[in-house]
Length: 274
Image 1: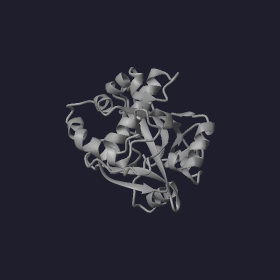
Image 2: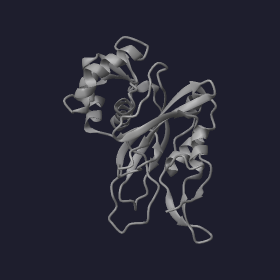
Image 3: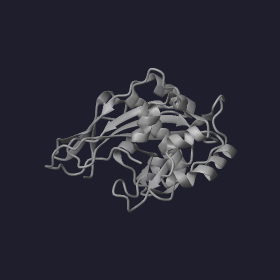
């Protein structure tokens, strides 16, 4: 699971290539409005330890393999193979890390229900976690079709060039199936929560949660919408502007992050505690 990190001190090391990654913003409606599923990273993980993040991770070779098998997904018509792999990776990570599966039984218009998902977990999860089967094997054996058509591009962040670990991260919105329950995996993530975007921001300010700079900005952007339907509709109409923060010196000599003004966030210059 991966998100673009906030910069650390500049490094004299050669530029590191950014790894292609997907991050999923899973939404649901509640009595109090839209909520988003987030997980807490294990404190011993070397990246974003202890942070509250969106599920996601690096694109894997198996994702590209599925991209070459159109019978395993819906919604990929005319899409570049790299973009397909990103969407497939997002669906795979969502299942592996959260237990939520954005897929339909072949021939159905409805997503996999809770009872079918439980049976899939009982039959396939142990072998998948042990590497005995691939995600493609699971999808094919269960005669499923990945619902890539439900993923809506929301944001694109690339780690600054001077960082020792870099990610080229694409963020997607999707509404979680109503009867599927999200859970953390207990390995890379140690807790999970459905939470309103503004509440997550407020509780980060209070010190309850540690939230990274890109996560904060995307929660602020998401909090403009009151419902999941509104957020999805807005994302379908707004262009995604790539954000690769620059480290600059502020007017008081402080180091700041600068992001594009047209990216749709809450400003351009931000003070960061490096």
